[in-house]
Image (tube, rainbow, N blue to C red):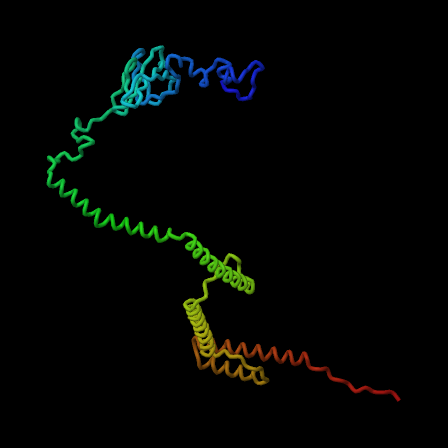
Length: 320
């Protein structure tokens, strides 16, 4: 019995009783040790294989658990042999299973029959597990000696030098761990300082141009500078080509900005008539568009000039 609440009765004497279990007359394992005087301990046992009960002839599957009576019945050299006596849950019959340390297995001794599920490869046209090569002949002493000699040579020429090289490398790196750790920490501090400076410079650039903080800036070196310059020249060249093409189209069409004049209306009419009578197709459409634009410009300029012209002033007559 275990004193979970640490309660000791008034008549408890430590020198006399020794423990609460002896005071109560109980075993430390409780009801599991009710047959401990017979060398039997109640334990939880799980069936290692399928069996048929010898009393009710019912099938009991592997993995069913019972409260078994565990008892030591002998030894195999220094390994004890245990027996587990269980009561069938389908009837009142008892069956007993023992350990077999010699063959590393369990054996049903009484009260049940084990289901034979072992597969023998030799009976089914195969080979035994320990002998997978069925055509293997008798061992040749010279071949065995040659094989062992090759293995010895491989070990001396390959494995031993490799192990020595690894040992020398371990001795080299483990000879002075303090100095090696000092070098590593110094290198780490230098790299950390460089990284902090680079991070500060990147944050300054991001703040200056209002860039997102999650944007990762590339390192500035000769290669990146040359690539950026090449991209800038390429973009500039594309812009120049685009502007030149626009100017060429305007020159071909003939629409160029001109200053408004008084004779623009008459010249536009005459040019429109001449162009309308002489040209056809796309050239006539372009000429008429040009004449219309010039006419509208001249009309707009005349209207603005008359609107902003100062009014005529009449002479002021002073009475005598």
